[in-house]
Length: 353
Ligand SMILES: Nc1ncnc2c1ncn2[C@@H]1O[C@H](COP(=O)(O)OP(=O)(O)OP(=O)(O)O)[C@@H](O)[C@H]1O
Ligand SMILES: [Mg+2]
Image (cartoon, rainbow, N blue to C red; front, side, top):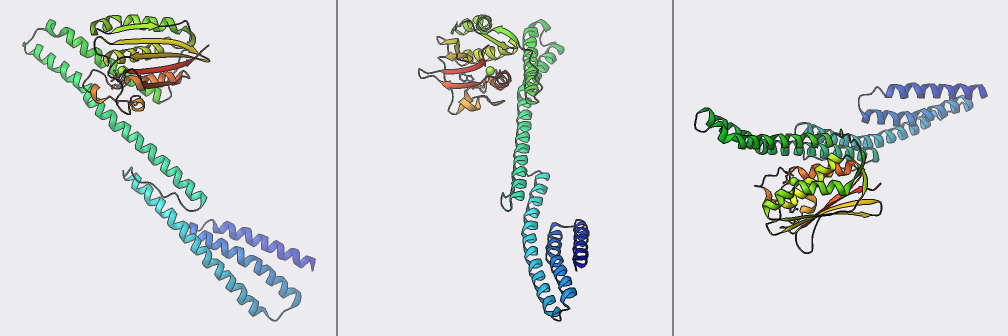
């Protein structure tokens, strides 16, 4: 009797493993699920039926067979129903990904159903959102390049043609040509810096530096521009040692002060303040200018963003995006706020030594 039980158990196990392996070859999830349900119901029933028949030579096998077949059919029908719902959801996900591949970047999958499918839909939606962000960035770049790079190129071209046609002398246009080439070079440099920040390829050569002295030097280098605009520019610094790449931090400070000068009318004032607060050193650039446009506190750090008032100005809308990338790469923070007295205040921090 024990021998028979061992044979039945071994046969059931072998049949189960073989059929389960074979089920994996079926072409759809729906068929695999149905097959699995059939196997899960019929195998134990067959084992019980076989043992019962062998042990008791029972004569009621037809009834037992009917009950077994009935319950197996119910299980198969139920699993077909479940498989149908799962297949429908997978089908909808498949359609969404086909739409995305066809260029409809607004398409999103419904995040519903069993956990695995919900996770899959969520990952799909995250991927679609990221793709959309990348496409938007590309569109923005093309719009920006077609204006901000083509304008100086067109102006250089026009001046060169005028010189070529003898309408003007080369000397007459030389300073303006040099200025336009400088503008172009600066914009291309900015684009490279930003793409390095985006790609995480920014390698900082950190060394110990005295931030107060660095800020003083930046302010001195912009004194002439401030004077020509009739804006009072002052630095209120204290000695503060930080670990940074001085060229990069200089670039951040120069952009903040240039912005403040650009947006402050004559007779106004710009102050650059360095202070140490706990584990951080803070640099703030405050101006008495026109102040920030509504909602600009966040968006002004986006690439290519220029306020309506600044659209026609010289800026390319890259300075603050680069500044944020550089400050964050140093482990600091950067933010903007309105001053109660009017004007703007843009500050950043660096970890103190
Ligand atoms: N101090 C400020 N006061 C008012 N608005 C400001 C100030 N600083 C920046 N902004 C606004 O934020 C925008 C983005 O500044 P950002 O430095 O990124 O670009 P930009 O100065 O226009 O060009 P770029 O720095 O590339 O030459 C500016 O165009 C301006 O509208
Ligand atoms: Mg700027």
